[in-house]
Image 1 (tube, rainbow over the protein chains, first blue to last red):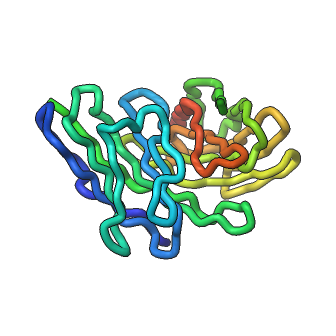
Image 2 (cartoon, rainbow over the protein chains, first blue to last red; image 1 turned 30 degrees about the horizontal axis):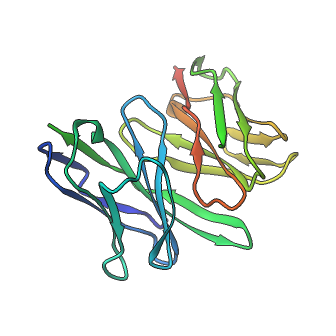
Length: 116
Length: 110
């Protein structure tokens, strides 16, 4: 079964540093997303990406965050100047929509980001 | 803003004891209600998408139903391996993002 692959599985960084989280979406999917889940809280939407541009973003996704599709397979989330409150699980997802119906809105296993 | 409320927060079941989880939602123009399973430290695993009131979908011991205001996930004769957090999410009109509820954590004892 096709998978969304995320690397690394765990990242520890010092406050103020920049991190890049990487994702390989399912190959025939055209819509890509980042979500985060702070420990014990609900999964929250950050950003969606289609046709090489951001299609929607939440209030969480401020100037500290950016996304990029640097090549034909990878999708990245960059967090600049990390803060303690950025510590969370970050999930990448991808989907295909045909005629308004979802075909496989699939999440990766996540990257656990710990800011110390 | 889309809102999703799941109940109960936690559910402890004996193996074989069937039960139901509730997901109440408020969304502007429902374009899909999603159920996911999440194991500790893992990403959400897709179970079902429902699109219109009256729709039902089944997978093994799980059955999801949808009305205009809520969805139920029925677990029939659960086994310990069904222990997980079950997440409900909705997609509204003109959205591709999902809005999640807080989940119901199900523990099935042998």
